[in-house]
Image 1 (cartoon, helix red, strand yellow):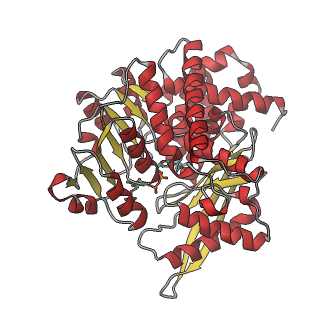
Image 2 (spheres, protein in one colour; image 1 turned 90 degrees about the vertical axis):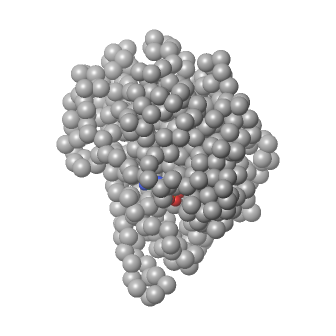
Image 3 (tube, rainbow, N blue to C red; image 1 turned 90 degrees about the horizontal axis):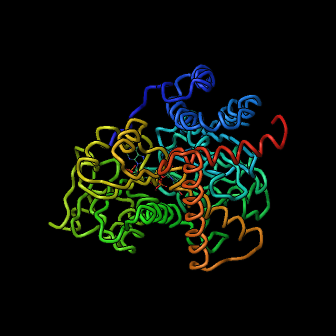
Length: 458
Ligand code: NAP
């Protein structure tokens, strides 16, 4: 799977906002993913500023395109062979208007400042949609945990936190996991934070282990939440996921729990992937095997086909989106689904797409889906269940409480239904029924903009 870059196209943006976009391009040269994320939001805001011109007069959108704070730092560490390694660490504290900065850390060799800025920008509006008191931020490093021993990962995490800790705090900035950062990494990061600060400040990181301040259902939350959202979309259109053929891309945290929830709701996931290829299993993905391979043994997806014998096949060249399905859930990474893949899906009868990953569909792919009448749920609404459950983890930490899985999962389901309702209602209010991209951008932006205006020129 290759990730694609997208050429900026201001034609999708209302003329009243194009100067804002040009300024973003000029001041953030070369940050293509950030440009794309801004273009996608500005593309929705024309009708909003027509109705509320004070957002333009007060330059709220320009302010939001500039992060409150951007931190870049050196992360030196020593590998198992005694060699010094140097990585770059980032934390973009994007907006604290609704609460402490909140958003994950990504460890992947592709991480650049523009990657973190795109993710942080998306996170502001996603977090606003949850209705919870959390601002937007994101961070990470170009460190690649793949092929590294546990002790190397630990030394890297300790060095990373030795710089980052001074910027964090339960009322300031609360990171979580993302690509390449799971329970193991959060453990090492939390351990180092605790040593440096001499405080057991559980609410400073989310995605913690259950024995030390973590929340039940947090591991499952993004994948489950995406499927709850997809289920709401289907119901709203008078349909259901039951008995449907589903393709999920990726095989990491979000993908695994999306597969689990689809299966529970009576759908069949026939394919999933990683960066080495995809597997097709017509009987439905064997979840116990996938979890063991990915969560325990940290294997490539090819091992799944080997261990399923003749029942599954591995495809190493091509796209997981070539596999015919009625429902597609991109859960791997940004720009993994382009317009060609979108046309293939439409041709094969896909009628619902919900994004578990952040910005996995290119803008051209989104246009193909919308023109074909495919129900399309953008990531900032569909995958908001992860961060929402992180906020529930913060609530439990603040009250020194620990909820049951059932209670937390029920809260997650309720939050996803509320987000769906809010997105649908906003789209209808602007006479754009069924346009989930517009509804999510307009609703998220309005919450943030109104809070900013209430606080003066910030
Ligand atoms: P993860 O556990 O690290 O899994 C990522 C999966 O995507 C892996 O199967 C990985 O394959 C594949 N992948 C990653 N980068 C790739 C690339 N450049 N090319 C091809 N395949 C790639 O990460 P995750 O937490 O599931 O996150 C997946 C997506 O969901 C990301 O967009 C993330 O921002 C978004 N998200 C995550 C959360 C959360 O709570 N974790 C919340 C909201 C949104 P390889 O192992 O081969 O690299």
